[in-house]
Length: 115
Length: 116
Image (tube, rainbow over all chains, first blue to last red; front, side, top):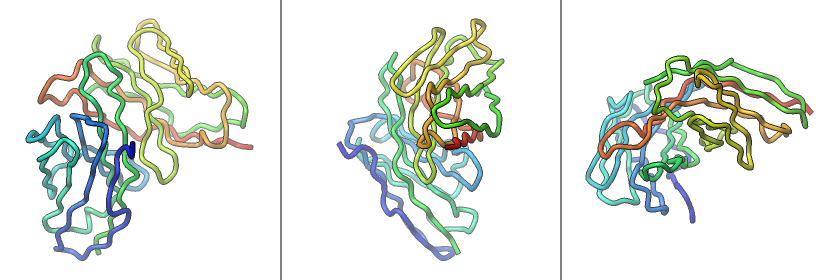
């Protein structure tokens, strides 16, 4: 199992550009989520999904779009990048089994800089 | 979401036990106590979780107070590789389809330094 993979690892954008951060998991997990982490801070939830075709907003969704067309993939789209979106982005996945630990598995992160 | 309180930082010597405290005085009856850690330049990783009873796994032990208003993550013999930020998180269960109960709400955690 590759676990949770994220691409790219690093990205530099200019203000106003758009891009998609890719996230994929091969564990057949229903739940997937996106977090951002700013320097010296904990992670903040952007969007999450409990299955294909179902997404919802987290704590800081503005400026980001998501979709979930398959169980495996959960891309995060920045429509018009802003310097405030400079951050490290983590994708995570877990099962939805009742009574399980529902341990979340995190990807290695994408470090995004917006100039 | 229920909140947790952790010290900003702690220091330990290598090969000594480490006790990382967490206060969660507003915990509800269905909240599980989860611990994650984040090594430098990596994503968080699951450490342990519990509801009422103390728990042990290969990474650590979790001691939960009888009133569940506090808990302690115990690393029995700290190594240099255990230097990380440790997050104590309350998480409801079971997860309800379409609901937010599965979401992890991260605070700032405790930065653990391990001295050789």
